[in-house]
Length: 336
Image 1 (cartoon, rainbow, N blue to C red):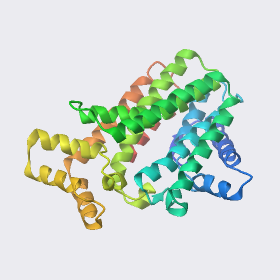
Image 2: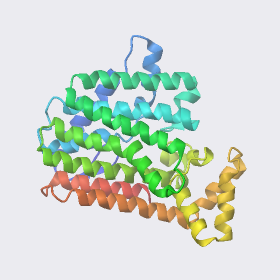
Image 3: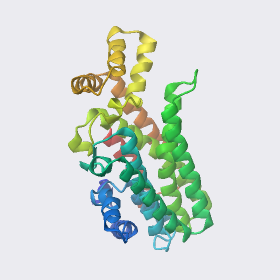
Image 4: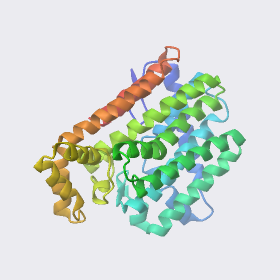
């Protein structure tokens, strides 16, 4: 058993491992090439997060799902570069919206150069992704455009919050389907589509990616509360400080409304206070880490990971399917 990529996926088949490793190396080269500019400062800013590393979760999915067709087809690596560039662009924008100071263990772009440069750099990455897409054909452009619309819609829904009478948890799951599930689904779709896999296989893998993406973000929600910056590569409790209700917080509020326990209500009140204050923020993190709501959020992660696993049922057994199943296990493991 060997390990592929920073995400830590185990692969038993040596030929599969070689294909995936070669594909990820080509993606890394493609990312550096796509983020070069004639203006040295733009290159520096655009490559800031590329060089900081990352799990390359989405390119890894492209490489694996391409195994259901021709993994050497010319569109596979460029499509993986597209999804990672798009993801990186959203990180630049997210850090501005969240006022985050750390990303992937380094200063965020907005901390280093200011909000305007961070936003414009994200836009630059979107432009470069679009340039590559244009060579992949109109269907690829359409798929990416639809996913990007869903991604932005998810972000807007998160910012606007649920309408009156809407279950906040269901609303949040819709947000995650757009913000994260859409691009992970496209990663799986592109890998299969660019490799020439059968359309039914493309559809199965797209459904798998959607559910895996939601599970992945739910795991991030848990990590944002439960981990320290050395594990997550970003400042713990960033969403908490900004008042963004992630799944552990939503499960806490749900429990407080249902049971009316004094300690739950008190913790909700603490979360509603000014968490820009470091002492209050630290207290909120400590109490939420010990609260049953965090375990409920972990169970939510497991549920979506299991749905992703179940979506793979129509696919033939083999090393590629086993690797995709293990991705579900790896996501759950991240959430503890």
